[in-house]
Image (cartoon, rainbow, N blue to C red):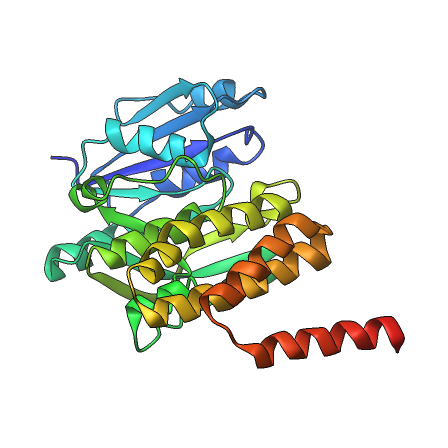
Length: 287
């Protein structure tokens, strides 16, 4: 049986995908299959990938469905005990598959969280995961998972995979659902995943990120708050307040910003916060 199915979702990454594929081919664990899901690319991705195809490397083309749709397609095709998702412009350390599969095999946990080696504007940085004392409310307050890309396939499929309505924030949504479903994880304090920030990527498009953040909040936080969870309601209110400010100041979107602020106050009538905002705005106007 194949131990790990590695899934690379790709959209117009012909200039980067070779390095990603090589990082998988050079793994210390060789019991893997590699599934490349081309999500409607219009560049030379197919031609680049063609030279790599063999009995362990499979190429699938589909009409554009977004990264969540591409990941889900790969997971459905996968035969491995575990699945690992690596974006087409990123890479993983050589020992990644061996180390993470061994951890899950020994522990019985459902997924792994690792540190990240980040590359942005030629600056290299290690981003460490800071796990809160309360995992459940911690994930609602902040997506503390630096990178959760390695899963027991059965556990991932049991919660329905990635939400295809989200173009961004899909990882946060999945992390929340894994934790709400009590799927145990193991944190590996090593930067096994290398992430490269590139201009023009979806995560760099602020309006899309804000809209998807609102969708995640309404999907999880609001549903918990409406069921009477007072702490979730407070977190929801705080998140909405900050989101409303970001809509106002970074996007100049008064409608979305106003909606978030009104909803924030409705779920937690913290008038000191409202007063502080009004005083701050007044000082801007009148000096």
